Amino acid sequence: MRKRRKIPLRQCVGCQEQKEKKSLLRIVRTPEHDIVFDPTGKKSGRGAYICPDVSCLQKARKQKAFNRAFKMEVNDDIYERLEQELTKGI
Image (cartoon, rainbow, N blue to C red; front, side, top):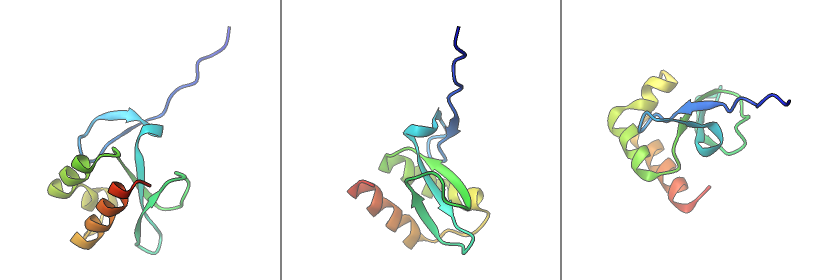
């Protein structure tokens, strides 16, 4: 009998729902304090997860969720850049 692999779960910073890690997008604060999408899930830095949905990004923006997740001030132009990347499809 084979052991079932545990599926890693992460919480979306926008809607606060627990989902499979694979279904979420990872956003990273790099050691240089840049905030970027991480399609590989392997970049070094502090990560936060979000659903691939613009409404979750807007909720996160309204709640200042990335400010808390990254322990720094995330300004509006970063949110706008993330929204553009999300709408064009990563």
